[in-house]
Structures are given as structure tokens and as C-alpha cells.
Amino acid sequence: MKTTRFTTMSAAILVTVFSLGSLSACGGSSSASGSDPASGSQQEITIATGNDGKPFCSMNEDGEFDGYDIAIMKAVEQKLSKYYKFTFEGSDFPTTLSNLSSGKAQIATYEYENNAERKAKFTYGTVGLTKWDTLIISDPSNGKVYQSFDELKGKKIYVTTATNQAAMAESYLKEHPDAFKLVYGTYSNEQIVQGLTSGSYDATLAPQYSLDLWNNAFHKGLKGSDKAVNKSSSYILFNKSDDKNLIDRVNKAMADLKKDGTFKKLSEQYYGADYVPED
Image (cartoon, rainbow, N blue to C red):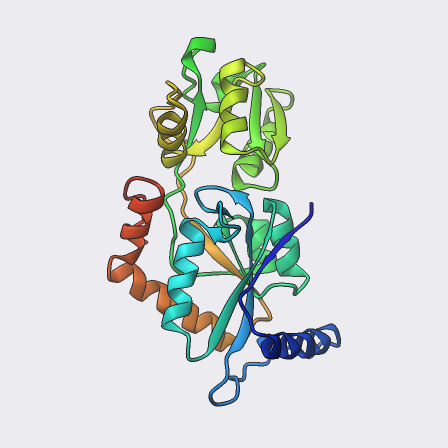
């Protein structure tokens, strides 16, 4: 999928970035060197994120990156402006991980939950972004409110490609082959809701705030399971080879922003309620 590049750098900084990119291609990127930038300069950090993942990370009407994840990273940048300049590389969800693993980006933010595959490849941030307790969500007018995976026998379930929701459904299917059919995609919120209400699939997996967002934005009566089928939070990701100073500073800045109420304020702004995890 074609990516979107957004930056406000001057021509002089662009020359510097080109030089850093050349070093990276030779295995000598300063982002993984463990050293600080020269006095009075900023190290450019590229953040892989979404360009159509509203309300987390997307392009707004002005062609700028916006959303909860973006706002948090911009707040982190303000706290660390002595050291870093952040720019964003937008793509779909799976490509953000490819951009991070290839070294095209040093940080990725797109509501990543913990799973074994990602833990093996990346370093997770230590501060949770959003509660991601997963519910089974459906349109009751097309059938029923499903309370467990067992109740989904013979049904079609939409999951966004490469997400934790896809992984947990796939894990269930390994133990219960052909229990239900998975429909994969990278759909927008509107497309997900249209699929549920039209009966293209019977249910999807998502957290409470997504359910609230869909019902409020599209005036629907979607329902979620009474209890979460999985409890989780989302985090940012770093490459395992990233500069330890960068990782430590970003984690510390995020912890401070969470403590001073910035996370809660941004959650209420972008989600309409406080969905900040306690961890």
C-alpha cells in the first residue's frame, strides 16, 4: 500500500536525513548507536503509524497526521525536543510493522497489543496507551449477541489483518478447526460497521471504545459480549537494536504524560471517554 510522508523539516535538515539514511543502509544508523546528537542539534526519529486508522492515527482534512497515538507522540516530542525531532511515516497496519523491522522507522505506534511474535521481534514500550479488552461485537438485528467463541460456530468473523484479534481467533481455530470463518481486511470504521449491519459477516472483535465510537458515529445499535474474551492494553514498539537512550527517554516521557493527566485528556478528546489503562 502506498505510504504517506509528512514532515516540516527545512532543506538543511533534509540533507542531514539523507546522510543518516545512507549510513543506515550501510549498517551505521545513528538511531541505534547509543550516542546523543551533537550539542544544539536534534536527531530525527521516524515513527511508523497509520494513515487511515481513525481515531488512533490517520490523515486529517489538512493533510496532517492526527489521532490519539499521534497526539501522544507529539507530546513526547515536546518533552524531548532537546534531543529529537519526530516525523511520521503513514501506511496500513501490517506495513507499519514492516517499516519498523526494516529500519525505515525507529518507533511504531498503532495500538499494538502484546503477543509472542511481536515480542520476539520488537521491544515494547513500558507505558500502556489504551485499554484493549476485546469484546465480540455484533448487530443484534441480524442474529444475536455472542458471548464466547463457542457461540460463533458456523459464523463469519471480521478481523483486521495482523492484529492481536486476528491472532486470538486463529489460535482458537487451531484447537477447534473450522469452527468459524475469518474474513480478513484493513477496513475503515465505516466499512466494519457496514459489514456488520449488512450481514456480510456476523461479528467482529474489538474493544469497548470501538463499540462506543461506532454506535455514536454511525447511530447504530451494535452490542458487545457481556465479558471480554481477552484483557489487554496497547503499547508503542521499538526495534530491539534501537538506541537505549531513545527507548528510556521515550518511556520516561510517556510515564510523565500519563501521570500528569495528558493521556486522560487526549483519550477524552479522541475517544470521547477515559480508556487509559492503569498499567
